[in-house]
Structure formats: C-alpha cells, structure tokens
Length: 358
Image (cartoon, rainbow, N blue to C red):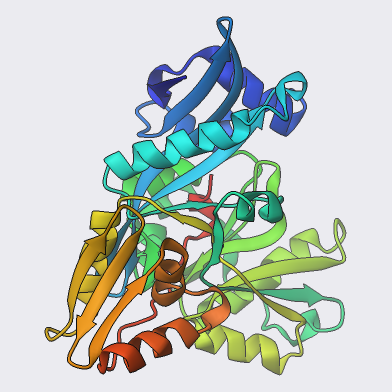
C-alpha cells in the first residue's frame, strides 16, 4: 500500500478513478482542490503485483462553525477495479486515508456516498443536517423576478468570495481557492448586481455531479431568490425540477421555501468517522464550560467530567453529541444529565457547500 501527494500521483490512480466513477471520462478538472496544480490533496492506493487495484483521495480542511474551527478531512473518489472487489481493498484504502488524515490533525473524516449502508457497516455514521428543497412548475412562479441576474465573470470572484465568507458555517478557503473551483466544468454560476455591486451569487452543477441543483449560494434571501429564479428559467426546459440545498442554520431560507410549499427533505450532511481523538477532545474542551474536564480514554473514546458525574462516550456517541444527524439532541441531553452541566454550545451545525465536496 502506498500514499502519494496528489500533485505527483501516479497517473494510473486517476485513470482508475475515471474508469470506475466516470466510465473513462475525465474528472480531474471537476476537483481542482484535489487534482489541480499546487493542490493540497492526497491519494491512497493499494497495489497488487505493481498494479493499482484500489484508490481514494482525501484533503485536510477546516470547517468554521461560528467561532469554532473544526479540523476535518474530506474523503472521496473511492474506486476499486471490478475484478479485485470483494477482497477488502476498498475498506482498507479508506481506512488508510482516515489514518493519514488523523496524523495530519483531522478530528473527523467526512465522505459523501451513494452506498451509505456499505460505509455504515464499516463504522461510518450519519453526521449533521442538510435541507433540500424542490423548485418546480407548481411553485417557481412564486419566486421573485430574476432582475439584475447575470452570469458570473472572473472579475466577480472577490465579491463572491466575500459573500461566501458571510456564512457562519463553511469550509475555510481562500479567495484563490474559491476562484479556482468556480472554473469547474459543468458549473453554472450566476450573480445578482444592484447599482454596480454584486449582492448575491448561486451555483448549479459541478461536472457530472449536482446537476440541476443549487448547491452553493451567498447573500440574503432578497438577493439569492432572484438568482434561483434565474437558474430555474435557464434549466426548466432541461428538467422539471431544480433542487436547492439549504443549511439547517439558514432559517430564513427554510421559512421561505416552506411558505411557497416547496417539497423539502431533511437529510444528513455526510458520513463520518473519528480521526485524531486528541483533536476531538480539544474541540469538546472549547465547547464545554470551565467546570467540565475532557480526557481521552483509550484510542476510541473520550470522558467528560462534571460536578455531578462522569460519562464516557464511544466514537459513535462522540459524533452524536457533537453534530448529530437531523438535529437529534438526545445524546447531548444524556451527557448534560450525567455530568450535571448545561452544554449550550452543543451540538454544533457544521456545513460544507457543494463546491467543497470531493
């Protein structure tokens, strides 16, 4: 087994990803933050007799949640040769990515997968919340007019990045990174300009992923909703529906889509695994009052000590207390009862926008 920075990854690893995930079509340009020149991503591979038979990519990122910095790793592009499946290679290569990410300080590893049951059987658990609403012919007419909406241009990147940075929950990325991923093939980005100022933006599509889906936007509802109308007008002949991803923290957007009777689904943000347990303990120290002490127990658990008692959380319980799926606070409530301290900062609501997924 070997690991290599993406900037010098074996061409065979990328070819395997493209063969398995894209039927041979190119995919490197869809993920500039992983495969691009100067990117900071990594690739893990498993070889048999000198041939790469399984591979995946990962990248270290920091999720910003209010004033908290949560060190994470995104894992993706998992691919195994068809004639080498059933040997545990896929599990092993992902495990190696998680271990490498933990060595790099990632408290949690996140991935997005269609086969969530496969990952759950291997220790991954659902994490966080993501709302998805549907715009279609039954409600699109209730959107405001697409006034001031135009295609994004390169000169708009500083303003777009500034709007992105107004989100309380996001990946910490630079303006250069934002500009790079906004050039992804298959991405349609619109901005709204009012009196010469870019006041909102919204993105649909990303390569072969997130088709007909508004997966990243920035600005107030008054600025973003006309952009969604603009995307609907541009795509309504291609599809009878447009999906809009909305973080749980964006209550104003949720209220609006509920008002126009948009069909909505409350799903999970990602699948997750614990990485660096010490980093996890430090996150809990920041999120708990001074009278609570946090310590690691073995290599998979932490303990919280409070005025009324002590509770030990397994790796799965850690994630359920920190950022449970669909806002389920039951584990946090159990912790509060056991240690006798209110934990107003738990759970948290991290979010990764569509441009950051791998």
